[in-house]
Length: 300
Image (cartoon, rainbow, N blue to C red; front, top):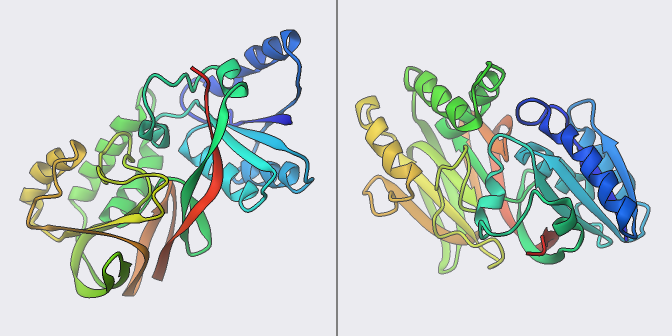
Protein backbone atom coordinates (compact mmCIF):
# COMPACT_ATOMS: atom_id res chain seq x y z
CA UNK A 1 0.00 0.00 0.00
CA UNK A 2 1.18 3.49 -0.84
CA UNK A 3 0.99 6.17 1.87
CA UNK A 4 0.19 9.70 0.66
CA UNK A 5 0.35 12.54 3.18
CA UNK A 6 -1.74 15.55 2.10
CA UNK A 7 -0.49 18.45 4.19
CA UNK A 8 -2.42 21.71 4.51
CA UNK A 9 0.06 24.37 5.73
CA UNK A 10 -2.80 26.82 6.37
CA UNK A 11 -4.53 24.57 8.92
CA UNK A 12 -4.52 25.63 12.56
CA UNK A 13 -1.95 28.05 13.90
CA UNK A 14 1.81 28.36 13.21
CA UNK A 15 1.66 25.97 10.24
CA UNK A 16 1.63 22.93 12.52
CA UNK A 17 1.02 20.57 9.59
CA UNK A 18 4.43 21.36 8.12
CA UNK A 19 6.06 20.11 11.33
CA UNK A 20 4.91 16.62 10.35
CA UNK A 21 7.27 16.44 7.38
CA UNK A 22 10.44 15.49 9.32
CA UNK A 23 8.42 13.01 11.42
CA UNK A 24 7.08 11.33 8.27
CA UNK A 25 10.52 11.14 6.68
CA UNK A 26 12.04 9.84 9.90
CA UNK A 27 9.46 7.08 10.23
CA UNK A 28 9.92 5.75 6.71
CA UNK A 29 13.72 6.03 6.98
CA UNK A 30 13.48 3.31 9.62
CA UNK A 31 10.46 1.35 8.36
CA UNK A 32 9.47 -0.23 5.07
CA UNK A 33 6.80 1.39 2.92
CA UNK A 34 6.28 3.63 -0.08
CA UNK A 35 5.26 7.17 0.78
CA UNK A 36 4.75 10.58 -0.77
CA UNK A 37 4.29 14.02 0.78
CA UNK A 38 1.96 16.47 -0.99
CA UNK A 39 1.56 20.06 0.25
CA UNK A 40 -1.61 21.94 -0.69
CA UNK A 41 -1.38 25.51 -1.94
CA UNK A 42 -4.98 26.48 -2.73
CA UNK A 43 -8.57 25.76 -1.65
CA UNK A 44 -9.80 22.33 -2.82
CA UNK A 45 -6.22 21.21 -3.45
CA UNK A 46 -6.65 18.31 -1.01
CA UNK A 47 -9.66 17.16 -3.07
CA UNK A 48 -7.60 17.30 -6.28
CA UNK A 49 -4.62 15.47 -4.79
CA UNK A 50 -6.76 12.76 -3.18
CA UNK A 51 -8.58 12.15 -6.47
CA UNK A 52 -5.29 12.10 -8.39
CA UNK A 53 -3.90 9.29 -6.26
CA UNK A 54 -7.13 7.36 -5.70
CA UNK A 55 -7.95 7.11 -9.40
CA UNK A 56 -4.67 5.29 -10.10
CA UNK A 57 -6.37 2.16 -8.77
CA UNK A 58 -3.58 0.87 -6.53
CA UNK A 59 -4.16 0.46 -2.77
CA UNK A 60 -3.54 3.85 -1.19
CA UNK A 61 -3.92 5.37 2.25
CA UNK A 62 -4.54 9.12 2.11
CA UNK A 63 -3.59 11.07 5.24
CA UNK A 64 -5.47 14.35 5.66
CA UNK A 65 -2.98 16.44 7.63
CA UNK A 66 -4.98 19.51 8.59
CA UNK A 67 -8.36 20.29 10.08
CA UNK A 68 -11.93 19.21 9.40
CA UNK A 69 -11.94 21.06 6.07
CA UNK A 70 -8.85 19.19 4.85
CA UNK A 71 -10.45 15.91 5.90
CA UNK A 72 -13.66 16.80 4.05
CA UNK A 73 -11.76 17.66 0.85
CA UNK A 74 -9.74 14.44 1.04
CA UNK A 75 -12.93 12.43 1.51
CA UNK A 76 -14.61 14.04 -1.51
CA UNK A 77 -11.59 13.46 -3.73
CA UNK A 78 -11.31 9.79 -2.80
CA UNK A 79 -15.01 9.03 -2.44
CA UNK A 80 -16.24 5.80 -4.07
CA UNK A 81 -12.69 4.66 -4.90
CA UNK A 82 -12.64 1.27 -3.19
CA UNK A 83 -8.83 1.14 -3.25
CA UNK A 84 -8.56 4.24 -1.04
CA UNK A 85 -8.45 4.53 2.75
CA UNK A 86 -8.56 7.84 4.59
CA UNK A 87 -6.64 8.74 7.73
CA UNK A 88 -6.59 12.03 9.63
CA UNK A 89 -3.59 13.49 11.42
CA UNK A 90 -5.13 16.47 13.27
CA UNK A 91 -3.44 19.82 12.73
CA UNK A 92 -6.51 22.08 12.67
CA UNK A 93 -8.12 24.21 15.33
CA UNK A 94 -11.10 21.93 16.02
CA UNK A 95 -10.72 18.41 14.54
CA UNK A 96 -14.28 17.61 15.57
CA UNK A 97 -14.70 14.33 13.71
CA UNK A 98 -11.99 12.71 15.82
CA UNK A 99 -13.99 13.47 18.97
CA UNK A 100 -16.23 10.55 17.97
CA UNK A 101 -13.40 8.17 18.88
CA UNK A 102 -11.83 7.22 22.19
CA UNK A 103 -9.34 9.89 23.26
CA UNK A 104 -6.72 7.20 23.84
CA UNK A 105 -6.25 6.67 20.11
CA UNK A 106 -2.96 8.38 19.06
CA UNK A 107 -4.21 10.19 15.97
CA UNK A 108 -1.24 12.59 16.02
CA UNK A 109 1.33 9.78 15.72
CA UNK A 110 2.56 9.08 12.18
CA UNK A 111 3.69 5.57 13.12
CA UNK A 112 0.41 4.68 14.84
CA UNK A 113 -1.51 5.89 11.79
CA UNK A 114 0.61 3.88 9.35
CA UNK A 115 0.14 0.74 11.46
CA UNK A 116 -3.58 1.42 11.95
CA UNK A 117 -6.54 -0.45 10.46
CA UNK A 118 -9.39 1.00 8.41
CA UNK A 119 -13.04 0.55 9.38
CA UNK A 120 -16.20 1.20 7.39
CA UNK A 121 -18.09 4.36 8.39
CA UNK A 122 -21.17 6.18 7.10
CA UNK A 123 -21.07 9.52 5.31
CA UNK A 124 -23.62 12.23 4.49
CA UNK A 125 -24.42 13.29 0.93
CA UNK A 126 -25.45 16.97 1.00
CA UNK A 127 -26.42 18.12 -2.52
CA UNK A 128 -23.55 16.04 -3.88
CA UNK A 129 -20.96 17.14 -1.29
CA UNK A 130 -19.83 14.32 1.00
CA UNK A 131 -19.38 14.78 4.76
CA UNK A 132 -17.99 12.51 7.45
CA UNK A 133 -19.48 14.40 10.34
CA UNK A 134 -22.28 17.03 10.58
CA UNK A 135 -24.11 19.24 8.09
CA UNK A 136 -25.99 22.21 9.50
CA UNK A 137 -28.16 24.97 8.11
CA UNK A 138 -29.67 28.21 9.32
CA UNK A 139 -28.12 30.32 12.07
CA UNK A 140 -25.59 27.64 12.96
CA UNK A 141 -24.30 27.55 9.39
CA UNK A 142 -24.17 31.35 9.36
CA UNK A 143 -22.02 31.12 12.49
CA UNK A 144 -19.70 28.59 10.82
CA UNK A 145 -19.38 30.84 7.79
CA UNK A 146 -18.51 33.85 9.97
CA UNK A 147 -16.16 31.71 12.08
CA UNK A 148 -13.72 31.53 9.16
CA UNK A 149 -13.38 35.32 9.36
CA UNK A 150 -12.54 35.34 13.08
CA UNK A 151 -10.07 32.43 12.81
CA UNK A 152 -7.67 34.73 10.96
CA UNK A 153 -7.33 36.98 14.03
CA UNK A 154 -4.11 36.53 16.06
CA UNK A 155 -4.44 34.28 19.14
CA UNK A 156 -7.99 33.23 18.19
CA UNK A 157 -8.46 29.46 18.45
CA UNK A 158 -11.19 27.42 16.77
CA UNK A 159 -13.53 27.38 19.82
CA UNK A 160 -12.97 31.10 20.44
CA UNK A 161 -13.63 31.90 16.78
CA UNK A 162 -16.88 29.96 17.03
CA UNK A 163 -17.94 31.85 20.17
CA UNK A 164 -17.11 35.22 18.57
CA UNK A 165 -19.18 34.25 15.53
CA UNK A 166 -22.08 33.31 17.82
CA UNK A 167 -21.94 36.77 19.45
CA UNK A 168 -21.87 38.43 16.02
CA UNK A 169 -24.86 36.44 14.75
CA UNK A 170 -26.71 37.20 17.98
CA UNK A 171 -27.30 40.70 16.61
CA UNK A 172 -28.40 39.55 13.15
CA UNK A 173 -31.93 38.48 12.04
CA UNK A 174 -32.66 34.95 13.29
CA UNK A 175 -35.03 32.20 12.17
CA UNK A 176 -35.81 30.57 8.83
CA UNK A 177 -39.18 29.35 7.52
CA UNK A 178 -38.51 25.79 6.37
CA UNK A 179 -40.49 22.92 4.86
CA UNK A 180 -39.05 19.55 5.79
CA UNK A 181 -39.56 15.97 4.57
CA UNK A 182 -37.76 13.19 6.45
CA UNK A 183 -37.52 9.47 5.77
CA UNK A 184 -37.38 8.24 9.37
CA UNK A 185 -37.15 4.81 10.96
CA UNK A 186 -40.95 4.86 11.30
CA UNK A 187 -41.91 6.24 7.88
CA UNK A 188 -42.14 9.63 6.18
CA UNK A 189 -42.49 12.74 8.34
CA UNK A 190 -43.29 16.21 7.03
CA UNK A 191 -43.25 19.43 8.99
CA UNK A 192 -43.06 23.16 8.47
CA UNK A 193 -42.06 25.93 10.80
CA UNK A 194 -39.70 28.72 11.72
CA UNK A 195 -36.40 27.29 12.91
CA UNK A 196 -33.25 28.76 14.41
CA UNK A 197 -31.17 26.02 12.78
CA UNK A 198 -31.13 22.33 11.92
CA UNK A 199 -28.64 19.45 11.65
CA UNK A 200 -28.07 16.25 9.75
CA UNK A 201 -25.47 14.29 11.71
CA UNK A 202 -23.44 11.13 11.43
CA UNK A 203 -20.97 12.31 14.09
CA UNK A 204 -21.65 14.02 17.40
CA UNK A 205 -19.45 17.12 17.63
CA UNK A 206 -18.85 20.24 15.55
CA UNK A 207 -18.10 23.95 15.87
CA UNK A 208 -15.04 23.38 18.05
CA UNK A 209 -16.63 20.94 20.48
CA UNK A 210 -20.37 21.64 20.49
CA UNK A 211 -22.13 18.35 21.28
CA UNK A 212 -24.95 18.91 18.83
CA UNK A 213 -25.93 15.30 18.12
CA UNK A 214 -25.09 13.36 21.31
CA UNK A 215 -26.80 10.14 20.18
CA UNK A 216 -25.32 9.93 16.67
CA UNK A 217 -23.29 6.85 15.71
CA UNK A 218 -20.84 7.01 12.80
CA UNK A 219 -21.54 3.51 11.46
CA UNK A 220 -25.17 2.63 12.26
CA UNK A 221 -26.58 3.38 8.80
CA UNK A 222 -28.71 6.28 10.05
CA UNK A 223 -28.46 10.03 10.42
CA UNK A 224 -29.62 12.05 13.41
CA UNK A 225 -31.80 15.00 12.34
CA UNK A 226 -32.29 17.95 14.70
CA UNK A 227 -34.46 21.08 14.50
CA UNK A 228 -34.42 23.98 16.93
CA UNK A 229 -37.40 26.33 16.94
CA UNK A 230 -36.70 30.04 16.65
CA UNK A 231 -36.48 31.68 20.05
CA UNK A 232 -35.90 35.22 21.28
CA UNK A 233 -32.34 36.50 21.41
CA UNK A 234 -32.51 36.69 25.19
CA UNK A 235 -33.01 32.92 25.38
CA UNK A 236 -30.20 32.04 22.97
CA UNK A 237 -27.28 32.18 25.49
CA UNK A 238 -28.96 29.74 27.91
CA UNK A 239 -29.85 27.41 25.05
CA UNK A 240 -26.29 27.43 23.68
CA UNK A 241 -24.91 26.57 27.12
CA UNK A 242 -27.01 23.41 27.22
CA UNK A 243 -26.42 22.75 23.54
CA UNK A 244 -22.64 22.78 23.87
CA UNK A 245 -22.87 20.26 26.71
CA UNK A 246 -25.20 17.98 24.74
CA UNK A 247 -28.05 18.48 27.21
CA UNK A 248 -30.60 19.97 24.85
CA UNK A 249 -32.53 16.98 23.46
CA UNK A 250 -35.24 17.15 26.13
CA UNK A 251 -35.94 20.85 25.60
CA UNK A 252 -39.42 21.64 24.15
CA UNK A 253 -37.93 23.75 21.34
CA UNK A 254 -35.75 20.87 20.10
CA UNK A 255 -37.15 18.26 17.73
CA UNK A 256 -35.08 15.23 16.75
CA UNK A 257 -35.48 11.98 14.87
CA UNK A 258 -33.36 9.40 13.07
CA UNK A 259 -33.59 8.39 9.46
CA UNK A 260 -31.92 8.00 6.09
CA UNK A 261 -32.90 11.13 4.13
CA UNK A 262 -34.09 14.69 4.69
CA UNK A 263 -35.15 17.31 2.15
CA UNK A 264 -35.38 20.93 3.33
CA UNK A 265 -36.76 23.75 1.22
CA UNK A 266 -37.12 27.50 1.75
CA UNK A 267 -38.45 30.40 -0.29
CA UNK A 268 -35.09 32.14 0.17
CA UNK A 269 -31.55 30.69 0.03
CA UNK A 270 -30.40 29.24 3.34
CA UNK A 271 -26.76 28.92 4.38
CA UNK A 272 -25.58 25.31 4.64
CA UNK A 273 -22.31 24.21 6.25
CA UNK A 274 -20.68 20.88 5.38
CA UNK A 275 -17.76 20.20 7.73
CA UNK A 276 -16.82 23.87 7.70
CA UNK A 277 -17.45 24.55 3.99
CA UNK A 278 -20.48 26.81 3.38
CA UNK A 279 -22.86 27.49 0.51
CA UNK A 280 -26.45 28.72 0.04
CA UNK A 281 -29.41 26.98 -1.63
CA UNK A 282 -33.22 27.04 -1.57
CA UNK A 283 -33.48 23.23 -1.42
CA UNK A 284 -31.06 20.91 0.29
CA UNK A 285 -31.08 17.12 0.41
CA UNK A 286 -29.23 15.22 3.13
CA UNK A 287 -28.98 11.43 2.78
CA UNK A 288 -26.90 8.76 4.44
CA UNK A 289 -24.35 6.82 2.42
CA UNK A 290 -24.02 3.66 4.47
CA UNK A 291 -20.55 2.14 4.95
CA UNK A 292 -19.29 4.33 2.13
CA UNK A 293 -15.82 5.27 3.40
CA UNK A 294 -12.88 3.47 4.99
CA UNK A 295 -11.50 5.50 7.89
CA UNK A 296 -8.23 4.57 9.59
CA UNK A 297 -8.09 3.99 13.35
CA UNK A 298 -4.49 4.34 14.60
CA UNK A 299 -2.81 1.52 16.47
CA UNK A 300 -2.62 2.05 20.23
